[in-house]
Image (cartoon, rainbow, N blue to C red):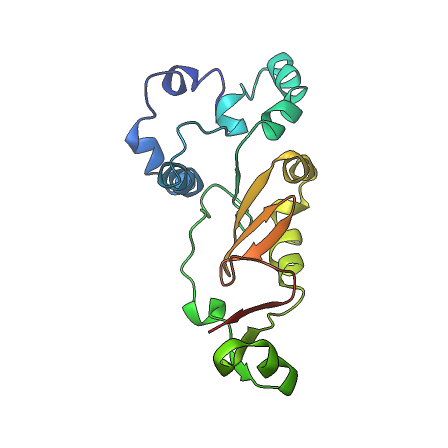
Length: 187
């Protein structure tokens, strides 16, 4: 957290590695790795960019949060993190994110498909975005509403899987082309 006591450290050329290796910094370590992996050069983290023990600076910066969020490219959301030690990346059961697929053949489907290919479809649990993203610990915080509404794109890291949201699409990692409650493709 940026404050009077830590400002010399955070305003230096780089954050000392020992700070990032502490157990309470897992979320920061993960978000730095994700940011670099996605090819972004800059990252805004409120608690590292705003002097937390300076009320006038906080008030001035909070007044400009609309610009920060709406001018951003992407918001990386530590959706299931309740503290800095939880991180973004979780050990997960790969079977939990592997959709169940069933081949469905019907007369109308067969007529619309070339070469008589069967339609492969999956119907994930319809409320998963609400249950794993909207109702997650982070999204119970009031200020997150502004982030979600103003940011053009959000990637949500949850314990179950990763979700994507932009102004025209919500999608889980199991079916990145999206759709709420239904997805399908041809195989």
